[in-house]
Length: 268
Image (tube, one colour):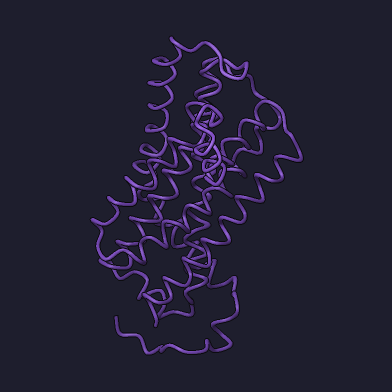
C-alpha cells in the first residue's frame, strides 16, 4: 500500500478513540451485511445445528444423562460455544485477510479519518455481535427437543458477544501474521479444532486425565460453555464471575495482539 504514515510515536489523533470513526466502520459492515446476511446466517446456524442433531441423536442413544442432565440438553447448551467460535474466529481470519490482502478495503478506510485501533475495534465488535445472535440458534433447537426456557438464558447473547469478541480479535491477529491464506489450515487444525473438542461441549472436561483437564481450564471456550450451562440451569455467581473474568482477560490479550499486528501490517 502507499501510506504516508511512518513508524514512531503515534500523533495525538492516533491515540484517541473517536466514536464517529468507529460508527462509520460499523455502518459499513451493516450495509454489507444486508447483502450477504442470508448466506452468512445459513452457514452460522446450520453447521452447529447439524453437530447438535448428529451427536445428540447418535451419542444420545448411548448416553442418557451427564451431570444429571439429558444428553441433548447438555449438548445443546455446549454447542452454543461452538457456534460462537465458528462465527467469530473464521470471520476474523478469512474476512479480514481477504479485505486487507486482496480487496484493499482497509487501505481505503485508513485514507479517511479512521485509525487502526478504531478499525480493529469496529470489525471485532461487529463480528462479536453476530456471534452473540447466532450462538442462540443451538439453544432454540435444544428447546425444541425439551430444554426448558430459563430467565438466565437472556444472558446467552451477552456471553456469546464477550466470547466472540475475544475470538474475533484472535482471528484478526492471525490474519495479520500469516504469510498466506493457506496458512489458516494450520490454525484450524492445530488450534480451532482442539479448542472446540476439549471445551466441555460434548463431554465434561473432568473426564480427561488430570493434566488435560488442567490445560482445558485455560481454554476460553471452556469458560463460555460453563457460563451458558449456568445461565440455562442455574447461575453460580462466584464461579461465573471467574469465567467472565477469564473471557475478558482473553479478549484484552487478543486486542493487544490484533491491534499491534494490524498496525504493523497497515502502517508501519
